[in-house]
Length: 250
Ligand code: PEP
Image (cartoon, rainbow, N blue to C red):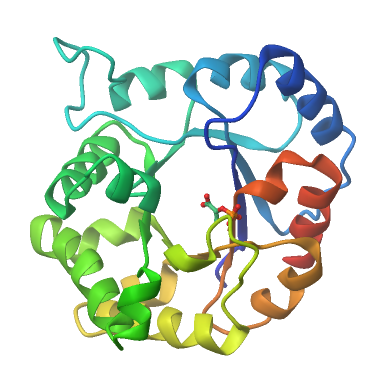
């Protein structure tokens, strides 16, 4: 009953020329009808991608948004209302690269989540533990804290219009992938945490796995009962590979 979602996070990659090539590749893909597909290019290229993918059922989202919903004096940031105005329907919040490299706190992530929703965007909340936290046996505690901070601020009902992405930091861009059992354990814990507050919301929310997903491992991950698709970084920069991942979710 949950429609799988496969989302490509292009991170800080691309030029106008390479984005044009990627659009061309994406336009040629045969995509499974039952799977929702989205790409998250750097903001600068959102309009180019949106125009380039017109008529193709691939949604376009942004990788980040401001903590304030509407335009104003916040140099360098992009308001969720501006993303909505540009045609974006989704936005990533709390990606580990922003939490760890740019110091985004749980509180900032919650504010971004709320700001995005107030503008009609679907937030994709990224959560996940570092290698040190996993080795210290703290995986479930860390993920529960990251998720709990949004629940505390906004209430569990906020997840009726949101997506969660579990992305173990040690698996992002490293070529290491969580095994399907390791991923399922965390996905099930996330769903149980939501179930404790609201079983309907928990049943409906899509929880994506992210961390070195590729065509070769996607089917195995997507087969797990609480994995509802993927957030794909590196492999989403190759249209054919991304297409194969999308088909694995179908
Ligand atoms: C990501 O950036 O969200 C990600 C999962 O990256 P990769 O697939 O390259 O590990």
